[in-house]
Image 1: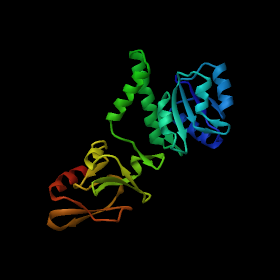
Image 2: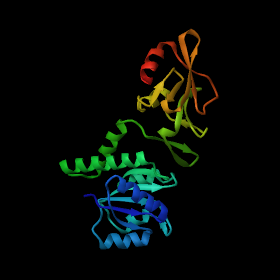
Image 3: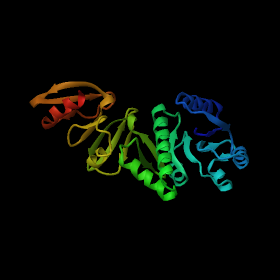
Image 4: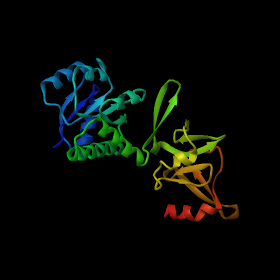
Length: 251
């Protein structure tokens, strides 16, 4: 049985996370609310298997806990802010969830933890093993992209992206909110990281999200025009050589 501790200063958020975990058959051992309280509890109790840790607590940043207590527990960071992502991953964390926590992303994080445990049972687990696990995860399909905005890093969830497109040799992600973000790499390199069941590269310029399609219209020379929920800047046309493959993808 997995022992779980939640460290979260917002009681509604803590209760919501506990309910989500309970629905997955997991029990929370303890709910803590601050840096000082957490340090005291962790010093006096056997450390849990897994900690859900908010970054900004009422009495400081939760990173301070690691300066006082040496932990081997797996950490899943939870926060409403994304500027601490890089620092979080330098610690013993296995995931970083933005609030409000999405049910599917929570499930993915728990599966990642379980995969880590299976690997731990088969070999001595050290920091290099954790890095190898992240490499394995990185080889699977992306669930989010990290973009830099000034001095800040922002996490963009894949499911919020309507389409990717290239323009002037740059690649952009268009979100269902209407926001656009510049990504690193070519459209082709970005597309290779996406789940092919979710995204389809309709031509050299566009890769679209299946869930964003609102209409498909017959177009000239046996092509198709795609309408997305929010992207209106330019016509999205399925190239003639991709029409057959596109129809099979929709099936």
